[in-house]
Structures are given as structure tokens and as C-alpha cells.
Image (cartoon, each protein chain N blue to C red):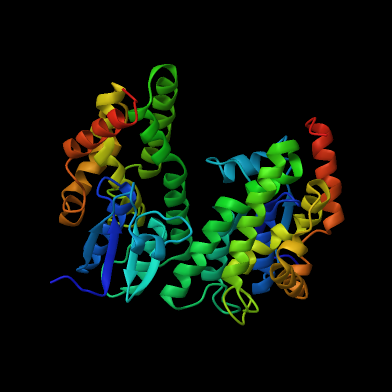
Length: 220
Length: 220
């Protein structure tokens, strides 16, 4: 049974929404998930996130929390009993937040511009994306997860974007695995976790969504 | 005596650097402040913040923490003994982080574009800045500080930008006090705190800096 006190306003292809689903799954929280039509946003979404009017929004006991990494931190702090996502050490926490912020500032735009772009601009964005992923790969190093042995905050922040890799590779004509084998191995490791696998759509669903999006926006 | 274990890499007109100074002052932490020349960055800055190569950087026990609101959270967590900047309640924490993020995404750009812009574009940016400040004023409401009775995280995030208001008003030919009287009253209230007043440069120093910047970049 879903806990009626926890509602997620979501749009399934959104990597930001996936982050929240993974965090909720890690904590074992049941919830009601409402899909939004972003071209006809619900009055609930507009009421719950009047500033940005964007998903995801987590509604807990009728109170909204917005912005995906803020929601992930909220989940970590409100349900402390299980699976800490952020480490307890202040320095390690600051490093996790730094990389979460780095992902927010760089990965979404680079991913979107590669799959939706074309020509010379697309080539430039491919370079930017690979540079960004290689930097993250460097940060991962030989650790199992970004925080060390345990799956945590930075993994939650990044792994949803890997469900877009097939789309990026197909439209961008590149192999992320050739460029960043360690990062792709990490993504596969994350996908072995039920909490991740159950929160990410199949890469081909994402591809079908992207194809339709490009048709609709004249980006073919 | 400055604590040699705490070093701040700073550039004095930066609102982001001011945030860190206020947080350190709130906690009563002595530190060494090193001014950076952003046109000839020190090897220490490049080593401590290889990703963004930007100030502020807090170096604590030889380990760097980057990105101003991340540093403020680190300071709050590493020196827990005094003056909590973030509330302890998870929901209130999430709201404070939301508004800190809102300020990061909106205020710097709007402020800079008003004082450095001109013509029709400047007029548009003036509208955007006032809209953004009015939204923050709404959030403040009739509270003494953003978090309630106590000075805290959102105040630390926003108040440094008020040292730029004189510059914005002079170059932009507007009165922020006429538009947002409650917000300006809040700024004056914050400035009565020694921890804030001692961390912000005089508005005329900022104006002189901006004037010189505009000359140097042909923005007259």
C-alpha cells in the first residue's frame, strides 16, 4: 500500500524525478506517484511549486519540497533510520554536495544538447559531455561508488542520466563505454541494485520518448 | 590570532566570498583571508579548486571546500557548537536550501546585468531583478529574518548582494527601497549585526570597483 502521506509529482523520463524515486526506494518508503503533463501542468503542481512550476515535487504530509537534490537531502534527513545517503562526516558531506552540484550544473545540459542537437554544435557538445563524464570518472577512481563502498548521494544524483546514454549514443553516434569504461562499469554496478533498476525506465523507452520529442519540436 | 588551520581564498567584492565571511564570523572562527587576483589566479587556488577555479575556497586542515553555499553548510556542520545557521527540522532545512538555491540561480545574474548593462536590455533586467527581490520579500513576509526570529542560512545567502544595491541603483537609475521596502528594512536589520557589518565592504567601495570594471571592459 502506498503511504498516502507521501506523493511524488513526476514526469517519467526526467532524470531529476528518477533521483527522488531511488532515494525513496533506498529508504523503503511507499508513495503515490502522479505523472504530470508538462504541457498542461496540473493545478496541484502549480500550487505546490509556484516558483519553478517544475517536477519533481515531493509532497510529505501535505507540504511540498522542490528541487531534486534538495528533495534527496530532505528524504535522507526525514527518514534517518535506514540507508544514509549522505555520509556523516562534514568534510565528506561537503564533497558529496560539491559533486551533486557539479552534476546539476553540467550533465543535464550536455546530455540534452547531444541528443537534440546536430552538426558542428552537436560535435562540440559531445566533447563537453565526454569531458564532464571523464571528470566524474576521475572522481570515482577505483571506488565501487562515489562515496566509497556504499551507494550514496552522488550515485543517486548521477545514475539517472545513464538511462539516457543509449539515446545520447544513438543520436550522437558515439560510444560512452569506449570513452568512459570505468563510469559505465559503475552504472552497471548501480543497476544491479533493485532500488535503482526499479526506478529507471528502460533505455529504449527513453529513446522512443526522445524520438517523439524531436519530431514534435522539428529537431530531426 | 588567525587559526592557521582555516584559510579563505577570497576576492573582496564577491558576494559569494562575503557569505563565507559571515558564516565564519557567526561561528566565531578566526581565519586567514587571502585575496585572489582573478586575472592571475594563484597556484594555490588552481590546486584547491581545479574544477571551477573560482573563489571562495575554504581550506580547513589543508582540505578544500568549494562553492559558497556548500561552504556555509560545511561551516555549520563542522562547527556545531554555536549559532546554527540551518534549522534542525528537516522540512525547514529543505525550505532554507530551496531559497538559497533560488538566490544562487537568480540574484547574481540579475544584479550584474543591471549594473553592467544598458538600454532596453538593462530595462528588462531591472524588471527581472525587482520581480526576483519581490518574490524574496514575499517569502520574508513579516518575519525578522528568513528563518524566523533568528538570523540564518537564507539571510547569509542573500545579504551580501545588498552591498551591491547602491551600485545597482546608481547605474540602473532605480530605487530598490521604493520597490521592496520590507526587504531593505530586513537588510538594515542584518547590518546591525556585527558579524554582517564586518563582513561586507562599504557600498561605495563596491561602486568604485564596478566603475573601474566597466571602464576596463568597455561597458560605459
